[in-house]
Length: 136
Length: 136
DNA sequence: ATCCTACGATGGACTAGATCCAAGTCAATA
DNA sequence: TATTGACTTGGATCTAGTCCATCGTAGGAT
Ligand SMILES: [Mn+2]
Ligand SMILES: [Mn+2]
Ligand SMILES: [Zn+2]
Ligand SMILES: [Zn+2]
Image (spheres, chains in turn blue, purple, orange, cyan):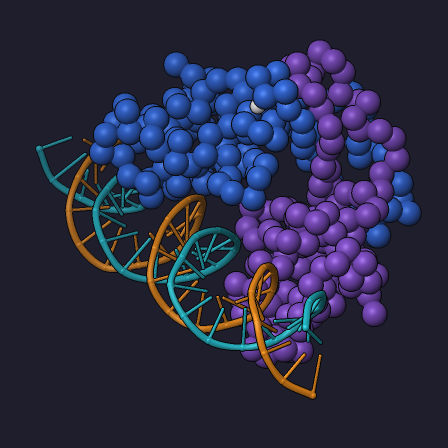
């Protein structure tokens, strides 16, 4: 069983067949599925699952902090189960492949006070762009 | 007249009343308007302008490299006329205010080869998150 | 100044992605 | 096994954006 499922059980999350398959298809490394992709994979395991439930469940996982939303292209949001290890993304400009990356250094420290406009800065998302080995 | 308009003229861009007002409403610092916001402001100056023309013109300005698309929230894309000075963004999590920022350091250099997965990395976008002075 | 025409503008239909809702179903507890 | 509030469902609805046939015009030619 997946780590995610285990954590959710531990938090008293009410378990249903639908929620289980959504959590299952999100399990893994470098996973960044759109809601439609989650629906397609969930439907393989549980044909009667509905689109609304997929959206409901993804939204709840985001609220619980177990999944993060990633927007790399202005199209469909992607859902990332790797929420417990802060990271950034490397995206292929041609095929859209996405890898998790962990840059060195502290980007927050690189933003001088004169560039903060009085904001209380709490985090940063970085999206590296390039071409993957297959697309070069 | 705006810098943007001047550059476009110099590039032989065919000028129409519609294109002029779109370019005009995009002029300024820290401007990051959605297509609908551009349409609303353009309509103030030229009531008969159409939504399709706003999208056509924005798309062309992006192709020309005079405007960049910014996606900060998975909702509507925003259009940024400050394309000739590379920069990143600081976004208020509550009210959505967006400021242009110029962090120190070279984020590309902070991505070690072991984290590049064979990609040819060519750029990076950074979105700082926080609360603006009015929203703290 | 007028003509010509390729390029731009238009409105409305259409699509993708996402959300909402009233009604039906069921997991968890007793 | 009875109860009940939480979950699921299909379909309607919404937002952002694209597409297209047709009309209009900017700007070069005369
Ligand atoms: Mn990730
Ligand atoms: Mn900007
Ligand atoms: Zn690729
Ligand atoms: Zn704010």
